[in-house]
Length: 270
Image 1 (cartoon, rainbow, N blue to C red):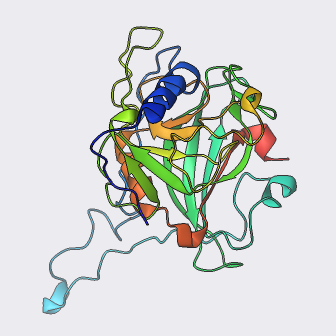
Image 2 (image 1 turned 60 degrees about the horizontal axis):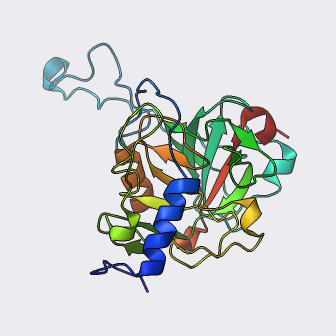
């Protein structure tokens, strides 16, 4: 059952939110804005002939409908090597692949792939810009290393300061998701946690993103989220524009066992 808006957050949740602001996600430098595909628009469309189809053809015949180019079906997830592909569960039908520009880089791109059934071909979605941790990526994330963990992680729980936008994921809303303060260049962090999706790295699936349970121990970090972009790299999370976050929340379906595959380009090709 989804957890909906709560009139107030318990003290433990507020303390957890404060801890996340201190050790989870934040900014350290400014990024120039990047264009992204508008969620919901056709991924690839083209009209036949110059200027598209006309209202009528010769001899009073209707002109042909504009030709639409369909998205390709892919037998394998692009950019993933055999080791990484082996991590994808057989029953997963949604895979958000986030590919960093480099091991020590904090920018990358993301594509949400879907398939109709286990074993079927993958259908690629839009390509979106994404920000990761300021120092890049790591195979063994530890608290305070300012790197994002490499790997495949399930996505089961979401939340935010704003009400549920229509997600099928378990959603926890409330004031404990308030982001305060500024980044290293003085940019406000307000709004960063308006929408979040918890990455199941060192956390308990099925709990609110604010839950502080750390199965691997506190030293291995945690509080890794997908959240709203604040114009810069994070301390470990992945950030996307607000429209993309709303699109992900409305599209990800627990019945499809969604996962995020994240890491730098070279690591994902292993």
